[in-house]
Amino acid sequence: MPSFFNSWLPFIYLYGVGGLFFLMGMIIIKKSGALDPAKKSHRRWFKILLFGFFYFTLIHGILIIAALYW
Image (cartoon, rainbow, N blue to C red; front, side):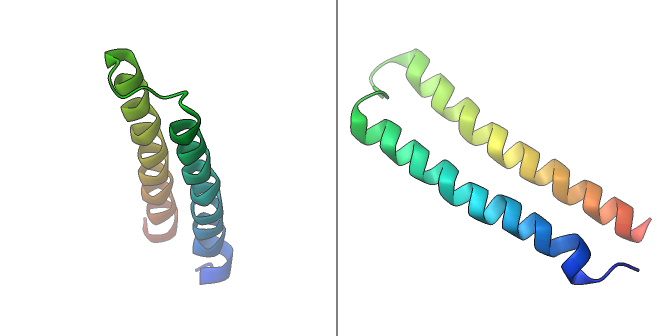
């Protein structure tokens, strides 16, 4: 069985560090005025971006678990 360092550490790095950059980008978008929460389409795309990040995190985690334990 692969060790923690070969399986979960890259996952944590990818979504931890990548998540920080994603979060910083979302903050910059909001502070710069590029995101107008009053507009329906802006709210929709904001939700799509958040959903996409968490969706890929979940799918990647499930596939790691499947590879390690099945």
